[in-house]
Length: 64
Image (tube, one colour):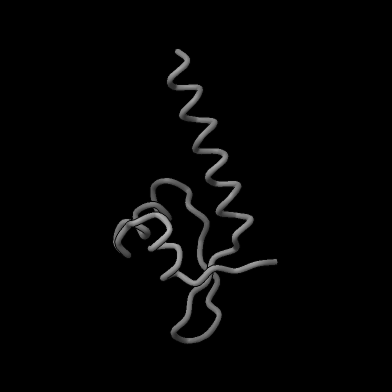
């Protein structure tokens, strides 16, 4: 498994930590793994699956 630190997730998507929290709560973004007391990481495979689901949903909405 490959993991991505939260700061890299924020940078990759160009979002704030508050937006990431909203995505986790409202858009089913993968929950972080607490690697240590101060470090949260995300499973890269879960992020890729989430992105694929978002793209699929977007295609369904736009094809109607």
